[in-house]
Length: 187
Image 1 (cartoon, rainbow, N blue to C red):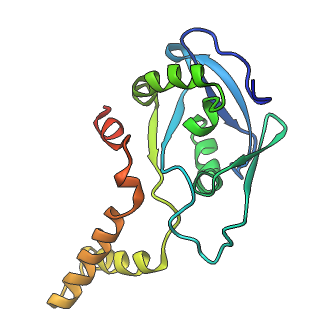
Image 2: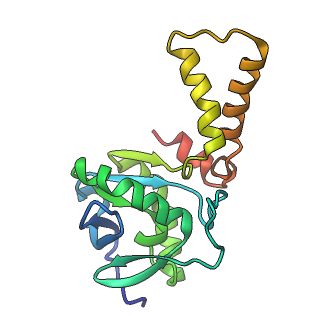
C-alpha cells in the first residue's frame, strides 16, 4: 500500500481537502459516496502538458499529501495550483482520479474506475481543465470576445482568426481522451 493511502471500505472513495489556497498542500479523506460532503470533480488530461512555456522536460512536479512529498504530473500540478483557491472559496472538497485513487493498487483502481460515473454524478460541480492559457489562443479568443462585446467582425480575415481560435481550443488533447464521452454525458 502506498504511504498516502489506507484501505477503502466498500462503497467509499477519497476526497482531497486543500489546506491552503496554493492547491499544493492537501489531505486525503475517505467518505461513502452517498454521504460525502460537497465536492468538485476534475476532468483533465493526464501527463505532460502540451504547452511548455519554456519549462524543461526534466522538471518534476510535486504536492504535499498528508504531510508527505508526492510527485504528480505537470498538467495536474498546474490544475491544482490554479484551482485550489477557487475550490476553497466554494467550501468544497476535491476529487481527482490520479490522487484520490491509489494507482499502485490494481484492485482498488479497477473498483474505483467502475464508480467514476457515480463520482461525477454526485459532484457538486465538475471542472474541465484544458490547460494553462496559451498566448496565441488568448490573442485569438480575445478577438472573439471583442466581437461579441458589441464590436462586430468587419471582414473575413477577422472571422477566420476567430474561428482559428475556437478550432485551436477544441484541438487540445483534452477532447481526444477516452473518458470524454462518459464525462460529457454525465448529468
